[in-house]
Amino acid sequence: MVSKHINSVVIVGGGTAGWMTAASLSKAFAHLPISFLLVEFPTIGTVGVGEATIPTIREFYQKLGMHDIDVMRATNATCKLGIEFQNWNSIGSSFFHPFALYGQSVRGVPFHHYCMKLRASGYKADISEFSLGVQLAKSGKFTFPSENPPSTMSVFDWALHFDAALFADYLKDFSIKNGVKHVADKVVSVNLRADDGFIESLSLERGEKINGDLFIDCSGFQGLLIEGALKTGYEDWSQWLLCDRAVAVQSESHEIPLPYTVSIAEKAGWRWKIPLQHRAGNGHVYSSNHISDDEATDCLVKNIDGKLLNNPRIIKFTPGRRKKAWNKNCIAVGLSSGFLEPLESTSIALIELAIDKIRLFFPDMSFNEDVVTEFNYRTQVEYERVRDFVIFHYKASNRTDSEFWTYCRAMSVPDELSYKNRLFKSRGHLVKYPHEIFQASSWTSIYNGYNYLPDNYDPQADYFSNAYLLNVFEEMRASVKSTVEQSQSHNEFLNYISGIDP
Ligand code: FAD
Image (tube, rainbow, N blue to C red; front, side, top):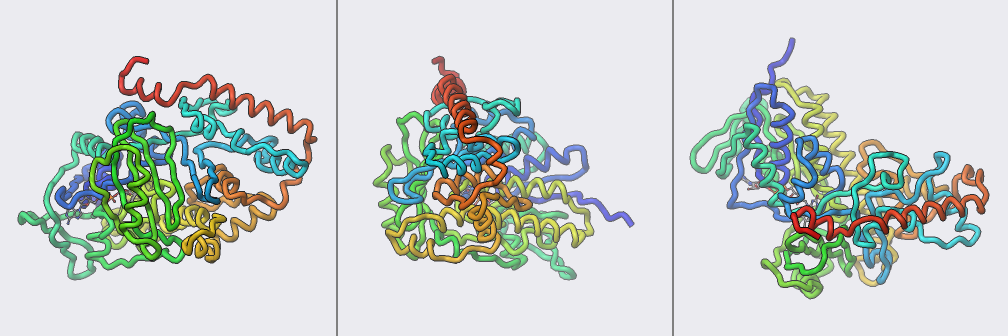
């Protein structure tokens, strides 16, 4: 028997997660008789951070028919070619995690194997010289990647730094034009069906009752529906991710915006600097067991050059994930579904993945258990793989200058990460797990950044002589260099976006 279709979807929360979900689902299901309603209580406010993204954000809005330049104009965005990690491996050290390859494969063998081979005979080049993404970033340049795969120009990608509130507004306009009904009121109770505990309706402060078939919880850390009403449970990952607070503040910026995020490791966490067109976003993520809120705030504020535009705000969180992102007729998206920490700017990307899965597994009124299980399994794996990528930064650091870093160096890590690291160490092999956001090139860049190098290289790299490889390397280096030289500055690109003549 065919089950009844879902007719009404209710989204609770008007932050980045809520409006991304509303925009995407209302567009994807525009041809179906499904109503979408988003309820938010503006007085509660959104988390108010979340300004750095990874390249998948561009696919997200392109699927909605939006263009890079329009989104950048609407959100005061700058380009992001990657993240520079300062003081992470040791005080004074620096490396990049670009959205780009570190050198190109030759005969199917990844570039880092050839590097290892040459290093064994005394070759000293820095592998990042062969990464167009890193070299553009370091030179403050920006250009669009080529869509022609064999081209040097196709080997990098880019994302945005944007004003998250403006991005939510942009998506809100889009969603409302697409038929999403918007209600500004507070949800005061979540009413469950007596027979099976599914959500039946929401009661609002002004007395209205909202019924729905499917409820999407985008209410932030509290998880008003998924936790408050359905008591789903939360898996806490603080044994690996010690940071549980952030202090954030916006500042004036008179500098030319960098085309990358800066992450600076501190004694019990790290600081971020995110350049937007009109201001900078700054924050300090830290472990409250190792430093106080005042110390963390001082450390943040004393390192900001421009005038502060608001008061520093402390945000508390527990790193981890909701045990089930989908429970009964409720799906948690965004902070209600989990949060690691913003080191690799992955939270918005996890929202995109959740929305993709909602589209893929869009239920009917039977809420088939296998569908729910598959959704939850994939969500779990996506979170775990991001978790491991973030944990690696702490585990691999060679810093020993505080109790925080000493703990991180000594801690044991999840099995999948440990296995991945062992395989890389033994012969430079990069394990690719299913549903993993970060690709081999990202792992190569962080392994290299922490000087975590393989003991052996792929024997196929011996196919070429050192002399031949040195020539190939020089050609790659020259090609990267000339592309960087010919590219416009990031500032010229931003001026073009804002309509300022050079
Ligand atoms: P919120 O922004 O908290 O929105 C919750 C919504 O629920 C609000 O609209 C509120 O009004 C509504 N609401 C709550 N209760 C009720 C109620 N009772 N009735 C009606 N409405 C209600 N992500 C990145 O990708 N990149 C980053 O660089 C990044 N940096 C971050 C830095 C920090 C310190 C933190 C904490 C997070 C960061 N994130 C980042 C995560 C990112 O901010 C979030 O993933 C994103 O903003 C989505 O938040 P949200 O919409 O789930 O929740």
